Amino acid sequence: MNAQALKIILMMSTLGLGSVTLMGCQQESEPSTESVQNEAVLPLIQAHTEKVTGVQSLSCEKEGCTRYDLQSVKTNVDWIDQYFYDRIKRAEPVAFKVNQAKQESEVDVNSLDQRNIRVGYLGQQANLATFVMKSYQFKTGSEFGMYHHEYVNFDLTQKKRLALEDILKKGVDAKLLDQLYDANMLWLQAHDIEKAQLKLSDNFYINAQGLVLVYPLYEMADYTTGMPELKIPHDQLAALLKPEYLPNLAQQEMPKP
Image 1 (cartoon, rainbow, N blue to C red):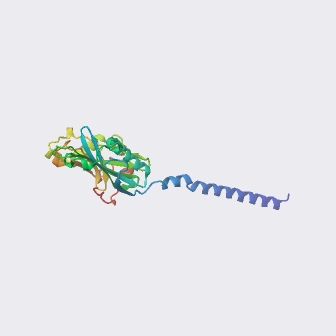
Image 2: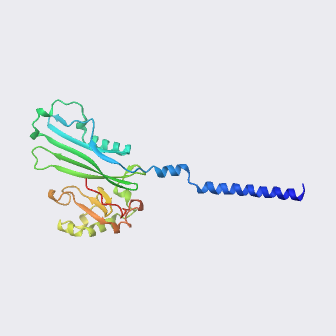
Image 3: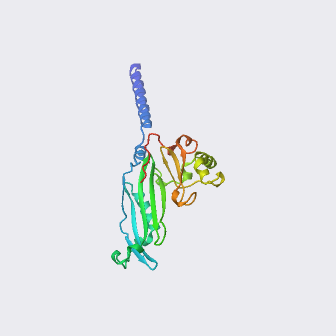
């Protein structure tokens, strides 16, 4: 083999190695199909409220008759719909029984107990979707009914409901209590609630204004006050919440259902 032929072979080998190297770099820089699919999984929630099917509007037992009004959300996310259906079924099992001895026309409407549940969709910020489950119970002969608003926050990526501890940074509970008291001091003092009495609530929602902790009827004040809401302002949350749950200031205020 002469020198000229050897030179040509060496040049071709070098070009071939360069092509392989370039292809390798391109393969490393391109995202995998799996990662692209994972990023696309996050749904944009669409929801409306509708009556729960397969339930009785009236149920009569030995203790008396109860009228039910049960409404849940219908969304484009099946596991969310199933979560609320299961919750309602556990809360009101009698309404799902098929045996019904009396018609509503046979019952004195003034003697009916009332039990209502209504689930509403509040909004979504990235992977965080928030709903509210409103329940109301009225017992015949009572002066007034009892109600409760339970806020339900889902992480759409993890497909699970979030507790307060899930959104907080590690070890910030005491700091959160301090800031919660300071931010709501005037209201708390007006209701004779000292700092040592204040506890965190696992009933919460997040909006553009900050973190809101919601407390049951009678826990902090009388019935007429309703369910107290204590707020931590947005500008204090960076030190308390995990980054993925920080509210976006550009987000609109969540509507009350």
